[in-house]
Image 1 (cartoon, rainbow, N blue to C red):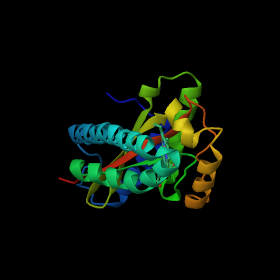
Image 2 (image 1 turned 180 degrees about the vertical axis):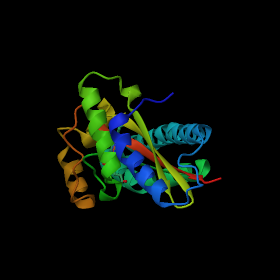
Image 3 (image 1 turned 120 degrees about the vertical axis):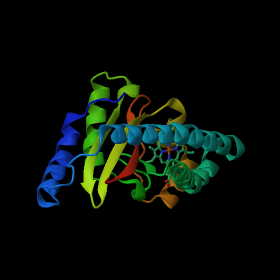
Image 4 (image 1 turned 180 degrees about the horizontal axis):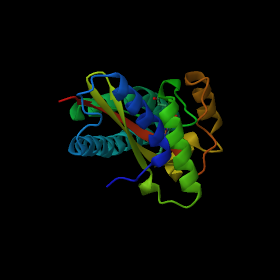
Length: 203
Ligand code: HEC
């Protein structure tokens, strides 16, 4: 099951149309739907594996050393866990947001459009679990299926992303992430999203 996401799909579809018009006219201009569905299943599985692993690492770090120490674990472990899960499912997966802590998680144009839509839907009362989107883009040798799922702030997350941070934590954040934008969130707000990219080879 996936939620239709018309607005964010417009750009990639246009790209697809332009690309097809200029390339080999015998090549099909869209991947077989079953391949897209299989790519989406892999993306969902990857996010389904990543979320509890990140949560587990976070819980362990908080329990062992408190929030300041846990920052170090998040900084080191989050990208490692994401690349291990990505390798397992043969795709790329990470997290992004409109306001990021780590600049290397910054959203690109498509991701930004999806995140803005997720935020609007959430404000309008949508169920957090319904925040999912995908697009299909033509690329050399095939297609790229992109997929995102929203991440909503829970009370635990407010320790490091909330409105009132402990002074020692704030100082450590400023040291590790001088351009941190990922504070000031309230529970229930959109914190960001999982974002995955799967390649479908042509033929
Ligand atoms: C111990 C402090 C801490 C807690 C608690 C915490 N985070 Fe984070 N969060 C971080 C750090 C540090 C990063 C940057 C990781 C990196 O360098 O890639 C981060 C990054 C993120 C990102 C990636 C986008 C960005 O801003 O760079 C998302 C999404 C995110 N956190 C969501 C959550 C959610 C949801 C929770 C609660 C389940 C949570 N965080 C709890 C410290 C924390």
